[in-house]
Length: 469
Picture 1: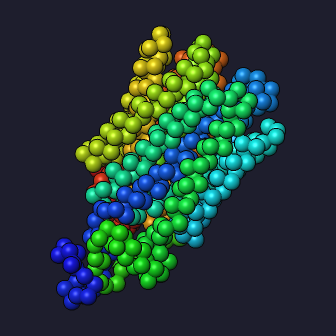
Picture 2: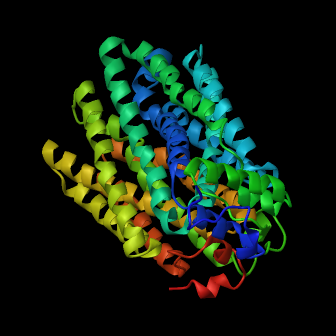
Picture 3: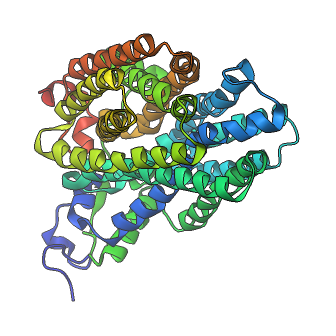
């Protein structure tokens, strides 16, 4: 029986001769396909969070195994190695995904992340470990531009923003998982063994995600842009079948392609301002977030907290991220992407000052939980806003470029975070708060609101003015 809202392909006479992919996705509606895609991408996103954040939990054990001093150059290199790989990976994989397709990169990056992640667990020396973490970062650096391009291009317009925030919220689940896993392993093994188990077990979710990804088709938007209409239609038929809908007959109309290609096209006069401002937001938010949280377990330990209590506190802070995401998912469709992002960034800046005023263990926990809530809400809004600002042929490249800006900041964040460990709390938190406030100003300066606007319209040259708030 055919759904009357979505006519069967056997009655083309009542249908328009062609439709855009936007119209087809909106016609097929939200259903099981999008929820499954969210679960698949989300699992890998949680696995990436575990890989990125486990360094701060493994640092104590690594220091014991290889004789590192607290705050030493070697310790900082260990914390930065994954970010260095992600910086290169974001640029390489994002551009490659726009050239060879989302799905190939979708699979390759996860497979390599699992291999290199496990290799780190068996590292016989610090040099081996640093190389393994660098290569792990190189692999997982590609999941950000690809996962968000895929999710953006498969979700109906009305649900797009919320699903992008939902995907980012899996980062909190990965944070909770790695904190809980580190806490559990610390009770079973001495530090010099616990970190190896942590690295090995953290690769398991990525392996499961890799298997699940095998059934995901490539993006119909990208396929159509490559003049592969038959494959694009087959991908849409897959969505229709899983959602229990019927895809309308007729040709698919491709959106106008932007002139040129690669990173240079992101810096044309039309896009230069928004690209640079968006990259600045990613840079400042990343500097504030990783500057605080890469050293937070060590900072709490230096304040006299017992190791198990440090892990428990980290777990509480991870749980505090979830309501930040949920509120962001609500606000981006009520108030808009840009307003929500600016609000969360300002709240994060204020939270850094409140953390500075904390004097007791309870006040440190409350203020850091509030800061965690605000920072991750800002990340949720930023991840929803960013892919919508790039046209389909440049979406993965654009996400790779702004992600690289974030990774550049995260490279310097551990060194700046050392100020926390050295007791220079006012200086470090003042820098972080200033960065977050600057990020809010840059977000406001983009001047474009993407809420409810089809991706095809956002990719056209005239959309820069049409979508301005």
